[in-house]
Image 1 (cartoon, rainbow, N blue to C red):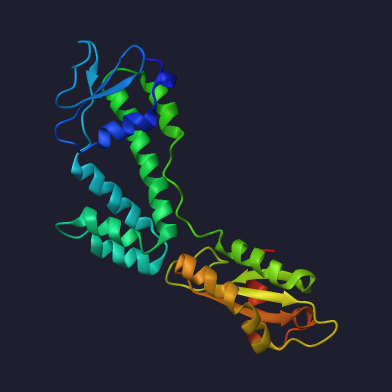
Image 2 (cartoon, rainbow, N blue to C red):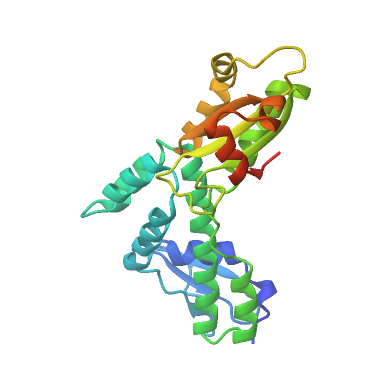
Length: 253
């Protein structure tokens, strides 16, 4: 059996994904080396080398479809879903990703994980590595989690940078606090500020934090809503929204 540690999975994944019609790829079953042979080149390699089969377009399309189903950015998800429908799906998918750099980066990570697992599957299917070795390798490359669960924490970090010691707490409430949040629901944050010196004017604070909220909305496609309150108002709430928020709150910061 081939020692899986001697195989460059990234190179094998590239060989599996190669669409060059005149190039053949081979793997050395003893040393794990990978070589390509095209027109006019000396080859093929020694007879015991194994030809590397290509990934079908159906498998590549499934990757795009699975990725699109997990995209959390609402506008990107809608456009990608439209892009992969019908002929020319691969080109439209690629072009659409360039409109959303962060989603594009997520796709690269997703694609790399899928392609490396496929490389492991090919090695196991060719009888070059044992199934226990294959299982260990597959476990190293899970699909990246596209969840936006970290968005409230990221917003809270930026609010802390904006307000400094004035920021006392950031509390998550509403559907995201109860675990029922989705791309269709807003992330509701109760932003608790120091009000020892002056009362809180909500409209002024919302204007101050507008850039922070918008940056995260633009990045994720999620609606982020903030309710600024003073710490004394939090301990003696008179606003029904604040009362409800306190009852549901999950502290983010």
